[in-house]
Length: 242
Image 1 (cartoon, one colour):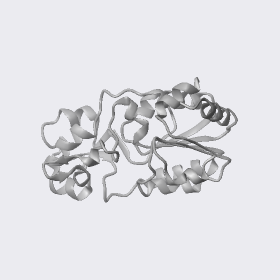
Image 2: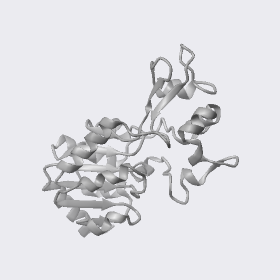
Image 3: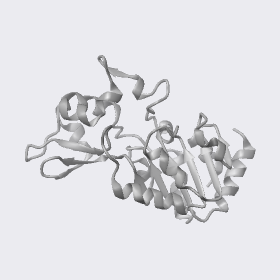
């Protein structure tokens, strides 16, 4: 790990008044949650001959809910996962008044579990589930403990409050994310390849002083960055020492 880059990141954070963090699947890999697009990612797996990426689409969910939930429970729900250093340090920075918002593409709820208050979940959360018929709410345990397709007391299918392929992002989440990014003096983009749209486009609203990229591989925004750290994001945040 490059000590000079860690020191530079700490200095940027300490001098920030409106820090915003934009994160992706790489944030949660240290919590033993697999990512999606790496060589070992979920999207390189199949259910029989059906790609997992196709199964987590709206059309597949509607036509084959039994298969969807079998895959969803096994591949996308990690009830016992715990926040790592990245989640915990971001909470500390919020408590210090430096961090103003976490914008996440993840659905694992780990930022909230770590204690961060202002979390914008662009793709929803596995913790929230609702009946498609009467809109009654259910927790994750209800879905995980249901045999086959989870059903509401009214008979409707209980759908996870996550954004599937072919579904639109929540309007309020979009507007809140754009607002926070456009008002930030420092934006840290971490654990994301910036290849998931439209979420990845929101970083283009940043007009602040310092853009920091923390990701194991390069991303297209590297060219605009004040600081680039190609390393494990949990370890980077551990070394910051907050």
